[in-house]
Length: 79
Image (cartoon, rainbow, N blue to C red; front, side):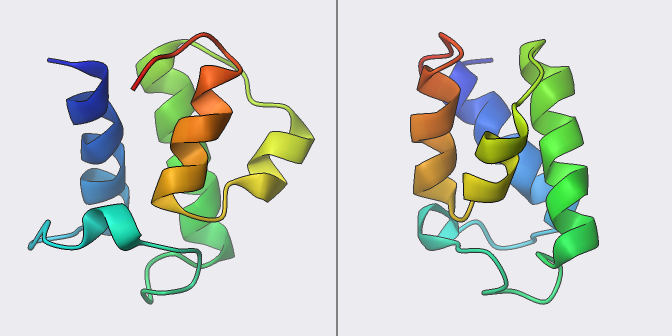
């Protein structure tokens, strides 16, 4: 499984997304499941899937699907 597939899977699983169309346009609170609790679930999934620990600033900055890709690059995870 590619890193992109693992990354996308974290969103699909965490937010129980059935239709992946438009997933790359997701933003914090753009769907009901991506609230503060869902956000921390996503952070935990990303940390587990990629074997990293996100800094607090990065957790706060994780505001969209696209922003997450930028943040993971800081941890040498190429999506």
